[in-house]
Amino acid sequence: MKTIRNFPTIFVKAVSSPSFYQDVIKGKTTGAFGYFLLLTLLLALVKTLLASATLIPLANIFINKLQENIVDVFPSDLEIKIENGSVKSNMPQPYKIPFTHLQKLLPQATTDLSPQIVFEENFLVIDEKAKTEDILKYNTLLLLTNSGIVIKEQSDAGFRYQPFSKDTNLTIDRRTVRVIWSRISPMAKWITPGIVSAVAVIMLLYYPLWHLIYLVFGSLLLLLYMRMAKLKISFKTLYRVGLYSITLPLLINYVVSIFLPTLWLPFSFTLIFLLFSQYMLRNPSP
Image 1: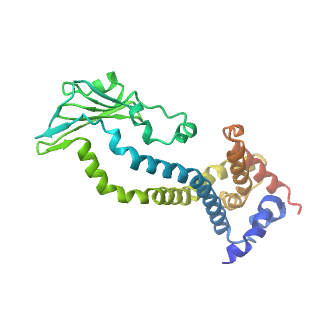
Image 2 (image 1 turned 180 degrees about the horizontal axis):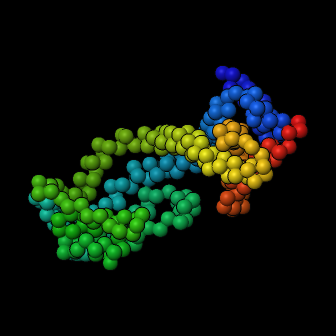
């Protein structure tokens, strides 16, 4: 409670008072970690709210489109049978389902928000005579062969083969999709809360932990500078200083990333952290 009560006062001192940092060096202050944790959690919470403001409408649109079109997306005349692990299809092969066929499931805004996402030409190709490497020839995300499915790995431009077991027996057609969707569609209402919860957990864990780790690197650079300036301050003390002096670069990074993201240059955060920290440490005036 004391950390929360004193937070506004410490926050102002952390971005404006060189004498405050002299007290930090002399060990006259306490609660550095509590202050840092509260600061980063507050920033992470705001980031989560801003991200949710974008994600929630997109998720709701996606869910609505999914409920309206998921059954119709599956070709009405296509039937896939897997008997004892062997695939048979009623369509001439290779049979292709292009990604454009799935566009009705995707919110238009996803294209605007993530223009860097590049889909394969095809979502699925069925070819009972195909080899695993034919997935590259067909430029498809999924390739269904006579004995399994080949999945394109986006990370390294490779692919993974998943064979069907000998006891696999099923039929996939539009009627099957309709039955399956009728069973799982009641859970669709939990997609949006699930996304928001996942973002919140990731942000609230990642943001403080990442910057705690970063401060090890930043404090080492600050220690090197202090040695060059012939100022003897221990690494432990500089790390404690960093728990406060990281406030300004965090705020600047936060504002710029929201309003002027293209202006943020590599190593800008570290440069601001080092310049601000050394200024506060070398100017002990109030």
